[in-house]
Structure formats: structure tokens, C-alpha cells
Amino acid sequence: MSNSFDTIVVGLGAMGSATLYQLAQRGIKALGIDLLAPPHTLGSSHGDTRITRQAIGEGDHYTPLSLRSYEIFREMERLTETSLLEVTGGLMISSLSEPVSVVHVPQFFQNTVAAAQKFGIKHDILNAKEIRLRFPQFNVDDDEMGYFEYDAAYLRPEEIIRVQLKLAGELGATIHTNETVIGFEENAKGVEVYTNQGTYTAEHLVLSVGPWLTELLPQLQPVFKVYRQVLYWFDIADSFEQFAPPKFPLFIWQLKGAEAGVYGLPALDGPHGGFKIGSSNYLTEPVTPDSVERSVSAEETVEMFNSKVVRCFPLANKQCLKSAVCLYTVTPDSAFVIDWLPDSQRIVLCSSCSGHGFKHAAAIGESIAEMTTKGHSRLDLSAFKLGRLAE
Image (cartoon, rainbow, N blue to C red; front, side, top):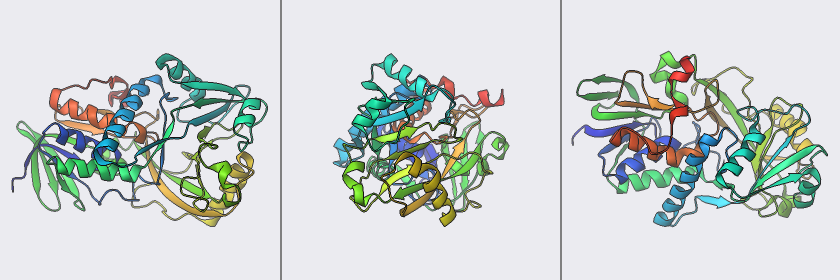
């Protein structure tokens, strides 16, 4: 069997599996390599569900990626007869009268509204009274307001990765799991990739390794930090109908006077599955995939309930049904990096998601496939250049 390929993709999570699928769809001889066996629970692409939305508060330059990803997810659903994207509607809450928690970037709420207006995305602006009438489960204050997006939805991340890898394999891609990449080297003829099982050559290499990035590229440690995040599912069995779609939307809430807000999703797995809630935390020390504490303490759970759940959702019960630890690889400006490595036109770096990448993954995979086959992508990726971080 030949060890020579057109393109090698290292890391088969959200971005890597999408890229491998898009390459295989174009008839490219591609190899995908992963340290583990995706989908798994040790990186950044798990947790049962992910929020997706169309008007992107991190900046309207993300919205074309989201809109195209919606289309690709729907295409994959038709091809595989699986459910990958389910519309619930999404409620973003903020207060314009006093400081609120930051969601990745300042002015998140205002940016969301501006993006919706620019791209014609169906939405409503709600005052506190209107939020209470439509969604009484949310304990909003009088000076808070909401943006409701009709087509906001949730994704099933594990199933999407599984489907993308299945389709890629059916289209001819080679997939190696449980194989460790030790290093790589670019030369005049291409790129050589060294693993614990062999050496492979290719015209192009895509690095989409998430929190393992700085193990391969230690020179990037100053600008790529990995943070531990915790997801919780709290019991709502006594009020299940109030927390299930369509009465309860997915949400992102910029809390007043708090370092971090909350985000979450409705009860999707019956009355005993709970509703999901999280709160992004970048105030702790950075971690590595090997050093991170993967269990969630009782103290953490109690703190989450007392500081966030009671405040926002009085109908929820204090029993936590389950929890999960996820790793966010974050840049200083919370934006992605999708770019050629410096002085290279063969190696593409795709990282980091900065905690808001899964919704864009399908379109990013398509864009990287275009970069490696045509030299450029149809969608504008100029905001995601690596050089901005050096500056």
C-alpha cells in the first residue's frame, strides 16, 4: 500500500473530519490521522450538542461561514438520513444599561443584531416584559433585553464527526486512528509526516489538532492557550415541558456584573435527561490534554448551581444529572486561525476554535479543501490570518 497522498489531515475532530470529507468529495487522495478514535470525549468536539446560529456576535465576517455550514449539514442529512441540525430558536440576553459579561468579544449582543440586519436573518428584539411573556422560565431583570433568532439550532457534534468520517471513507479517503504524529518536515517535493507507525508523504498537510497544537508547534505556545471548560446537565423533571422545545430555546446570556455569562440548550433527551448549561471560564491557569483534571468536583457543581442556575432558571432543580469537561484552545482575540504556516504554501494550520468553532466547521472544511486544491477559498478568511497574532 502506498504511503503517498495528495493531502494529509492530522486531527479528525470538528474541523479535520469536515476537511477530510470535503477533500474526498473532490476526488483528492487524502489520509486522515488521529491520535485517538473520533468521536471521543478528550478534546473539544463532544458534549452531545453544540449551539449554532446565523447572526454571529463574534463578528459579521463569521456569518457566511455559518450560513454555508447550515447548507452542508443539511446536505449530509440527506445523504445519510440522519438528524444533525435541529432548529429550536435561540435567545440572546443582555443589558445595555450596565456592564455585562463578555461572550468572546465586547459588544456581542450589538454585533449579533447588526449581523442579523446586514444578512436579513429573521429575528425579534424583545424587552424584558416580552421575554417573560414568551419565555417565563428566564428570570430576566427589567433592564435586560433579548434577541430571538428563529433559525438558531443545535448540532449533534459526535454524530456529525461520525458521519463526515463515514462519508470520507466511502469516497475513498484513508483513515488512521490511534496513531501518533511525531513530527513533519516540508521540502521542495512536498511534506513528510512521521508517526509512531510509519512515514507518509503528501503535497499538502492540514493541521487541525485542537488542544494538541503546541505539542506539534511549540513555538506557538505564547498565543495559543488551552482552557478547561465544564458542561452541566441539571434536573428539570418537575418542569420538563417548560424546558423542552418549542417552549424553551437555546440561549446565550450576558449576565450583569459577572465575569462570565451562561449558555445552554433545552431538554432534548426526555424528562430525565436534564437541560444543558455552561459558563466559559478563561480565568484559570491554562492546561494541556495530559494535565487537565477531567472529573468535575461536587464543589464545582454546587457553585454553578448557586451562582448561575438559581439566578437564571428558578424552576431548575439542584441535582446535576451529569457533567463533562471540554477543552477550548483560545487565541488572545478569541478568533480562529485558518492560514498557511509562515513561508509555506503546503501546510495549513486550522486552529483554534476559541470555543465557538463547531458551528462553522463544515464550511471551514470546505474552505481548506479549496485552499489546498485551488490555492484560495471562496469565502473570505482574511480575518483569520496567523500573522495578526504576531503583530
